[in-house]
Structures are given as structure tokens and as C-alpha cells.
Image (cartoon, rainbow over all chains, first blue to last red; front, side):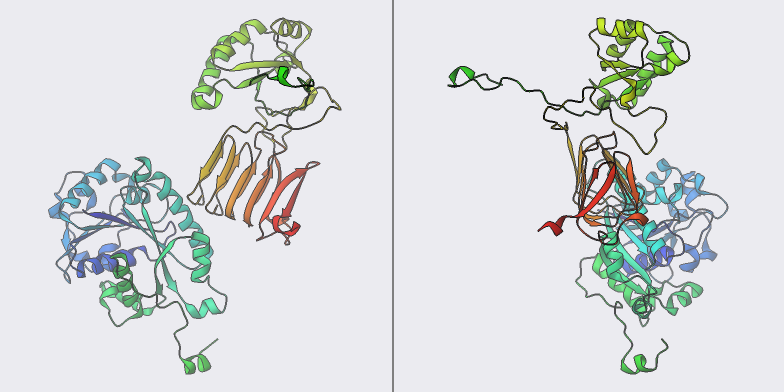
Amino acid sequence: MARIIVVTSGKGGVGKTTTSAAIAMGLAKKGHKTAVIDFDVGLRNLDLIMGCERRVVYDFVNVINGEATLNQALIRDKNCNLLYILPASQTRDKDALSQEGVGKVLDELKKDFKYIVCDSPAGIEKGAHLAMYFADDAFVVTNPEVSSVRDSDRMLGILASKSRRAVDNEEPIKEYLLLTRYSPERVKLGEMLSVDDVQDILSLHLLGVIPESKSVLNASNSGTPVILDEKSDAGQAYADIVARYLGENRPHRFIDDKRGFFGKLFGSK
Amino acid sequence: MSIDSQNKPYKPFALEFKSSTFSVPVLVLSSDDLVIIEHQLQEKISLAPEFFRNSPLVLDLQEINKQGYDINIVALTDIIRKAGLLPIGIRGGNVQQNKQAIELLLPVYSIHSGGVSADTQKPKTIIPVPETKTDIDADVVVDVTTTTLITQPIRSGQRLYAAGDLVILAQVSAGAEIMAEGNIHVYNTLRGRALAGVRGNTEARIFCFDLQAELISIAGNYKVSEDLDEAVRNKPVQIYLQDQALIIKDIMQHH
């Protein structure tokens, strides 16, 4: 049975698209046929992060409007043949999406794919609403600062009350916390909320912590999901997250200050 | 209840007068057009039919009398009964209206007893106080009919209203709002806004495991986070009203 995962946050710029790209790639690399959909109509980014922007012919809105078939619009990833991308339209806005249209596309994808990752736009308006509406699982991406945590909390409330599962009185969406751009050093200095602080406020199952890392920016610029950079801390953190989501038991990393004795001695304060 | 007084060797008291405080909705009328009143009443009721079913109601005539309208109490009570409400008295009526009410066996209340006015929802609300200030045992009976139990967290932006008591086992996030006509119990961290006794029950209390609330209110008497004493912050507390002042007490400190 296919599962629909929404990657959401409320707040913008916390790493939703980076996360969507990484986990979609991670799931596909584990042998599961995966589709990743960009719901950010009008501000399309996923294709850039996935490095397929030059191969976009048709998009999500074309499929909803019946101007193209799903097979015409899906782009196969160049790194992994089990991963497909459904890009957003750049020339339209969120009103081009309809609940009925999105539902139809997802139903069709469910026949053929194991995982469908929905990259939500920021905000709590129509685009974000439609991205989460049909979800089975939610990855709530949060930065360790108060406004991001507050917005995630708001989004969790919406997942619990406005999603299809909530409306139909089914088993609620499974919610997972992903803490991104985490810097143990800054937590130590009291400049950033700690993992415990965030979990205390959100009381949510922690799927993983992604450390603040240069490799994320490098990956975005080169159009390869950061999970493929197996040497990088962020890449390893996303690999852990995918493994944990699939049921593997992996201890949490990147939560404590990793610098060694000399690093601490000579490192900047 | 069974009456078994004949079995008793002595004669117990068969009755006792007690003074009780109730919170009752007041219908403030501002038009004498019975057709419009009936229409708008139906509209309001259709929004929350369960809430209004067989609800007691006091009719407030002060406004229409001030505007110089006259209204037929008999026809008016007919409309209200037809809508499924149970009128239990009037207030603010003129001599003629008061006489009509008494003939209909409807008590006449004094306007000075206050009440929640329908159009001005000020934070300070006063509940109708019993007319007769008796020196009989003033035991306040609070009629709590239902308890709402919530096990899921109440997230930022969510609002919750309970007609009776509200019991929450999970946390209440900052930016969430919980309201109850009765008491509120939060067996977790309370970070949002909590309003107990929202229809004027001054006996309502708020209990929580860890007080970090943005706002707490009982029967309209409120305090914002900034006004909370540091000594009670992050503590398990109970909050109640005493002489119109909110008292916040650490539950553990008494032991």
C-alpha cells in the first residue's frame, strides 16, 4: 500500500525542499519506487534542488487540468531510476490546484508508487493545505528557534483537524519531527533552542536532527540531493532519518558538540 | 427518589431552602417585530441546536422599552417556546409587561442583578445573583452536566469550547485557546489561553500541571502572562476567584 508523506513546516526557509529531495532520494535508494511532488506552484524550486530543471516539459497543473498525462509530466531522476519528480508550474499560482484534482493525481500515483513525497509550500493557505490534506505521514521540518517552533505547532494543529484523515475520522496522520540547521555549539552558548527544548514544546517523535552544514548549500547549488553526499554530516543525517522511518533502529547523531578536545580548546567561542 | 419517612422513628426535614447561583442565557430584544424576532431566533438556534435545546432563558425587555416599543409577552413567549427554549423569567419590563409575565407564571427579575449582555461582550461579566439575599445556608450548586475529555495536544491556533468541564491530558500549546463553562483541568503543560466559567460561573477553577499560560481567566476576570507571579510560573497550580480577584496557588505547597 502506497504511503503519502507531506514535508511541511508552516514557516518558510527551514529546509522543506532540501528535506523532500533528500528523503525521496533516500527512499528510492532503499529500493522503493518513489515520486516527489512540488506543491509550491508559482515558486517552483524542487526541480532545481533535484537538478532536473532543464528537463521540465509539463507540470503538476498541466496534469490536473488534463493538458498532459501523468507519465508525460513525471521526470525520472538521473541518479536513481526508482525516483520520479512531478514539478510545479512556475507561471501559475496556488489557485490552479484543486482538492479534487490533487486527489485524482495522488490516486493515480498510488497505483504505481510505494512512497509519494509532497513538498509543501510555506504558509497555511491553499497550497500548504492541499499538500497535507491527503497525507498518511507528516515530516514536520523545524529550525531550533521560537518562531519556527510556533509555526510547526500551528501546522500540527492543522494536520490534526483539517486533513482528510481528520475529516473522515480515520486514524490520524503520523507526525515526525525533523530538526534542521542544528548547531550544538550555538545551543551550548544559549543562542539556539536545544533538541529537548523543541521536543518539550512540540511533544513529537523525533525522527532526526540535521546539523547546520555547508554541504546542504553545496548540494543545492549543484542540483544533487544532499543525501547523495555520503561523506557529509547532513547527508548521513538524512540517511539515518530514512532508515529510522523505514523501521531501522539507529542512534541519534549530531545532537552533541562533535568537536574534539583541541577543537574546543582553540575553537572560536 | 423514594420517600421512606414513615419508616423513620423521628421526623427528618422534608425540605430545606438553599441559595444557588445559576448561569442563564439572557435574550436581549431590540425590536418589537415578532416576525423578525422569530426569524433571527431560528437562525441563531440553527447554529448550535444541541446547545439551545430546552435551554432556560431570561427575556430582557429594557432595550425595547427604552426605544418606546411595546411587545406582547404572551405572543413572545409562544415564539420562544416554539423555538425549543424555556423562558424562566423577564427583566427590565414595564408595569404592564410584568403583570402579563406573572399571569404567565414567569418570575420578574430586577434589572440590577446584571447579566451577560448579548451585544457587549466585555471581559468582566457578572452573573445573575439570586434576588433574595438570604441568610440560609448559602451553598452554591454548580450544575455541571458534561465533561469533555481531550487526549490529543491542543496546538497553536486551535480553539476548544466545552459546555461543562474540560479535562485535557495533553499539552496546550502557546497560541491555542481553551474555554469551558465549567472547570478546566490540564494534566500537562498549559502554555496557551485558558478561560474557565466563560458564561459567568465565578465558582469555576483552572487546574494545571505546569503553568506557562499566555492568559488565564475565570468568569471574565483575567490575567496575562506578564502579570503572573514568578513564584507560580512552571508550577502545578489551581486558579480560582475570590472577591473578584484571581488567586493562583501552588497545589503542592499545602502539603
